[in-house]
Amino acid sequence: MKFELMKLPYATNALEPVISQQTIELHHGKHLQTYVTNLNNLIQGSEFTDSDLEMIVKESNGAIFNNAGQILNHEIYFNTFSSNGGGVPTGKLADAIDSQFGSFEILKKELSDAALSLFGSGWAWLAADENGKLVIEKYQNGSNPAAKDLRPILGFDVWEHAYYLDYQNKRAEHIAKLWDIIDWEIVGKRY
Image 1 (cartoon, helix red, strand yellow):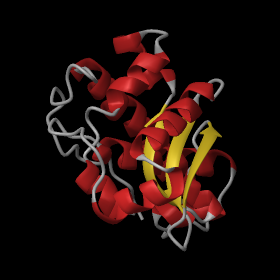
Image 2 (image 1 turned 180 degrees about the vertical axis):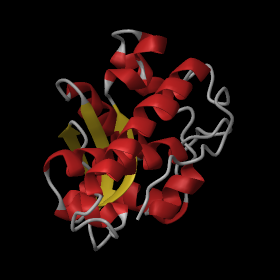
Image 3 (image 1 turned 180 degrees about the horizontal axis):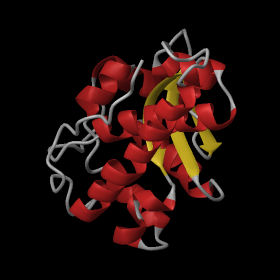
Image 4 (image 1 turned 30 degrees about the horizontal axis):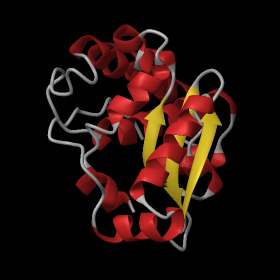
């Protein structure tokens, strides 16, 4: 299987001022493209030649895992946002959040805290197990909840390339602003 760079569901300037056009162009067009190119080169002739991305994340390690994980992470990440985003979750996801966390505000704080407390580069995730129980996970580097048989619902990229041009070392400000562009309809479908 040959992987391709995902198409963004919005213009590269659509998420401004939360995420600048320059950041989107570098993050998507350069960083993500590099992971796609690397993975395609790494899987040639390997046991993963015909595997889908999630299977590769679940069963690989080393460089193949790192590049596959970053592609999966970024595809979820970039598809999470909309210029009309913000607000709060609805439907089954909202019910699960209220039941398991007590409120959306508590979930928001806990996921933000997970993203802030991650030392170095990585991802903070809201994920669900096979029974729909929500959990907050954080991983260094490029791992994904799928590697632990969890379904990734919402991920925050805290690699510096995701925010440094716009926020410099102000990771907390970046994370706080991401909530304003989350498309809860799309996120809810992942649940």
